Length: 162
Image (cartoon, rainbow, N blue to C red):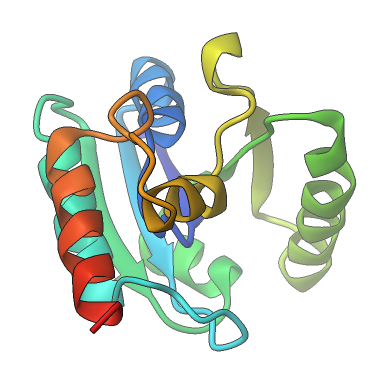
């Protein structure tokens, strides 16, 4: 079975992420959308909440699943018996950072390949950070995230404003 790990913070998952996951599902037997636990970031949603949001968002994708992992991505890739890491590239500005990550992962374990995939052009501008900022400022995020994610954002931000 050909498995790819689509790792990221997914705080929250967007239509751009889902586009990449769906298209990867056509190329691989199994796609694991894996939430990375990154202590250097301050996420809005907990890891458990992000996995739940992803699980609901990917319901219609039969060979895509959600998970989370601590530690090094290359270790998780081996643990899950995956063949590659999938990284989304929205713009040229993403490439340098993603390229450095891919090279470091290769240095850590030269058996782990990295595949880059761009979302549809309608999502190239989209980021979780922008979605959170738009929601925080009262803007409409319906074009960017599934309805259940929008509702979760509204609930979470309403609590943080108290």
